[in-house]
Structure formats: C-alpha cells, structure tokens
Length: 358
Image (cartoon, rainbow, N blue to C red; front, side, top):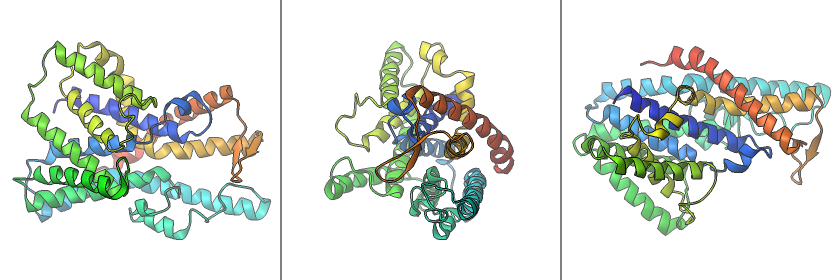
C-alpha cells in the first residue's frame, strides 16, 4: 500500500473523528445541528478491518504471532486510554473535594457514575460493559477493537487459507439475526455490530487486492464524486441515501468509500480539496482527538461555569447547562475544536508514538 493511499485513509479518520466530536459538543452550535451522525464509530471499525486485513491477511498466525500481534495492538491503544482514564479519576477526586468543602453542584455526584466497578472495567479494557457515560465515554469502542483484533488473529490461526469465508458468513448471519430478532435497523450488541463492520472492511479489502486495476478512467472519478457527496451528506446529517433507517447499511457504504479511495487519481479536483496536509495531519492525530475531545469539552464547560460564573439553566431532568446564545455556542465549539487539536497533537507525540510498538 502506497503512502498516498494511507494519507487518504487518514483524511477519512479525521472526518469521522471530527463528526464524533460534533455529536458530543452538545450546545446548539452549527456543528451540533448539522453533524448528527453518531454512527461514524462504525466507520472506524470498517476501516480497521480493511487495514488489518491488508497488513496481515497473508501472514500465518501461530501462538507466538498472535502474542506479538496482540501486544502491538495493545500498545497502540492502551497507553492513551490509561492516560485519559487517570485524568478523569483525578477529576472525580477533585469533584469530591469541592463538593464536600464548598458545596459544589454538579450534574453527576462524585463517584456515582464514575464508580469503582466502572473504573476497573475501564482499567482492564472491558469498558464496553461499563456504563456508556462513565469516565471517558468514547473509550467504549477501543475495548471492542481489542476483541476484534483477537477474533481476527484466532480465525487466521485456525484457518488462514479460507479466512475470508468467516467474515462473509458472519455478515450474512448477523443481518439475518438483526432482521429476525430485533427488526431491521437495530444495531444491538457493541461487539457484534463492531465485528460486522470489521468483517465488511476485510471483505472490501480482499476485493481491492484482487481488483487493483478495476477503476482507471473518468467513469470512476464520477462514481467516486457521487459516493463522496453521499458520504459528506451523511456526515452533515442529511439522510439522502439511508431514509430506510437500516443502520447496518452505513458500514457497507463506509466500506465502499474506503474501497473506492484506493483508486483515487491525484489529479482529481476533490483530491486536492480534501486530501491536503491539514486533514492528513488531523488523521494522524485522530485517535488522540477521539479520546481527548470529551475532556476538553468538560474542562471548558466547567471553567466558564465555575470560574467565569457564566449563566446556567436547568433541564427538566435536573441537569445544569450553560445558557449560551447560538453565536456563543459556535464560539464555544470552535474553541473546543482548537484546544482538542492542540492537545491531541501533544498526546500523539508524547504518548501514542512513545509507547506504540511498531
């Protein structure tokens, strides 16, 4: 796989990470209004399946190879996760101190949601079984990633020659399961929905490896333009393609986007618009953006509330929010994005790269 293609994947990582941020930056800004899709975590699973299959599909896995593979993936994900987990734990102790001594009013009482059981689930990389909003909420997906990596290595260990049979079988069985058990459109268990998307990534990668010269003309550029337009439309919340409400169709769509990106011509005008240095940079630090954005939002929100004494309002559920105008919400979100990117660049260089075993 050449570097330009890896850069293209980084751009998609950036777009997906930024859209997840917008969903969680929960004030009434233009970003929150239009970036409505929380399903872009499924894009990460699909992309992960594509890249992992690309790098390991022709490598035989013995016990030693599984150990090496899992250690590499562990050190890719866990150090940054642990870093943010400990920060959120420190915040919880600070909340407790301020509540006891100064009567601080917070939406979640100290150690009520972020309790000891949820902490240990996060600590042992089992956080998708924890409360979804405990500690660093977005981290649920990376524990699913580790399960997917282990499942991938086991399948290759037992049957490398016919590996692709398993993802295809799983996709078919999962769609039947969804339709018969929950009705169309229901994405149930985090692991199984993740495995579904991961498997699709493997399937699309296999098709790419066997059809590298499939698209090489103007027709492809037109086709890619259509799919990228639909991708951006979904990113901004316009359900042009998926009014059916079948959530699992998104992963098929994401797989198509990744697959078609393999054939993108550098002279194509969309390449020059989207695949620039800035978005490639954001893609490189996308994991740090994804794990760090909620912390930045939390810190800015509480700085405005408790230090600046910004006006607040209380919802019918008793939750306290800043009373921001639309203009103020947009400024808040832009500032949150800026700080998230700056902080993500720091954690990428001093934590991700430092501990990742290549």
